[in-house]
Length: 486
Ligand code: NAD
Image (cartoon, rainbow, N blue to C red; front, side, top):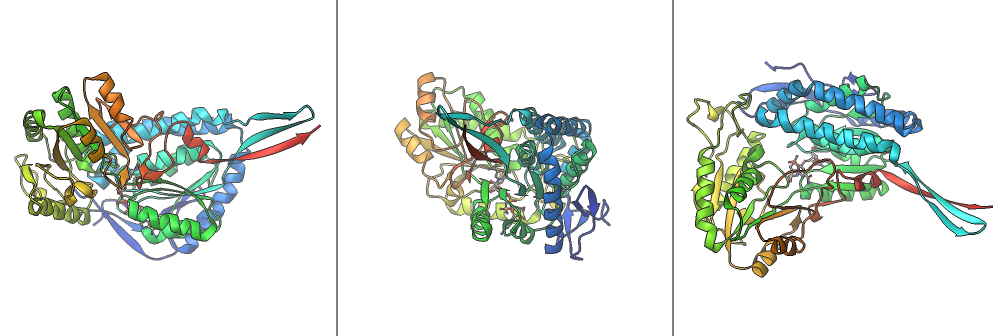
């Protein structure tokens, strides 16, 4: 029996039944138990959500920036009040340890909403003088209805990151969470309504890629914002262009380099490499999975990594002392374990892990869930598939390098360009190298933070546009220029 009631859709300010008659299951990946059956949206439901969004958007856009700001700030307060309850549900649905969801997922989502709530009244145009008797003024107007499609790794955070700038700028949103983790977005929708968002301004349609396609092809959606794999992103972009030439923002995958120079603080570098590979069981888009280590410090660095991997505490994700959870699903476990086998076949040397996790010392029954061991391969080479392809699991690849030019070339030798980072105590070297790395999100002597103020997004096949930061507001407004003759 499922733990929760059947999950509906959220349209026009309330939970409603889908018309498809079709449902799908969402499970707890820690132990395989059934959490809920979820109703899959039909084309009719998506149409209903878009009509509602169009209606709601007119009311929302007619409000002043200050009014929109106050409503969004109420939602921020409600999110923070319900932090622990939402974190609990997120942990059940994703398998991420409660120590993560309670302190990061909702907090960073609320931060983004708060940041853009503050900016809502500051959206303004320009005045451009032409001649004595003529000038132009510009207005930044909302785009209208935004179709938003989320990934499964940060369900409520991604929903907040996408809706925050869109709503602040006066748009309405039709949101499709990943079918793998559909639960918490429904709580966000309820919170928005309780905060005073007009009906229809934030709707949730549940379902798999078919529902995503209904959004990308919809004639009355003005823009698509997407987070997911680069391969899906290409389909989304083609479909969005083919229907009505919609604008797109894309947050896609990565295979990011983390470079450790011989003058680095090796403890800090090792801590960061752990964060960049094992936090959320490695299911983070910005992960630094290609760890390039200068040859003279490689052995010392490896010893620090092995010592830290031995200290990882796996177990019941609801236990606050646990810092390592399962993968998000059994399907994903299959993908990740196939890469573990591939790494062994390709000749990488295993320093830790390398298998599905079946038993451990905590007494937890890992065999029931989708658990993979934290794994470290070393002596990897650039052409190995474990080094080139995004695994999206707890798998670190260590590669040796000799000099700066070489590591810059090798770090950039990828179709991705999401994140990059380096550890060096040399000020000049750090800035010289980071400026030549082809990535949208870069870190020097740290790894992983993406605060609301920091624009994040990818170079190359890792994305289009940015989330967070001031520039994201531009992606949810269009400029109208008005010439005046006196
Ligand atoms: P995915 O591409 O499989 O799915 C993402 C979403 O797209 C889901 O909601 C899915 O239902 C939907 N979808 C599938 N087919 C579709 C189609 N044809 N048209 C429209 N929508 C469709 O990705 P995932 O497995 O959920 O997430 C993991 C990926 O997301 C990784 O590659 C990761 O790097 C990336 N990611 C990127 C960021 C970032 O900010 N750059 C953040 C989180 C995750």
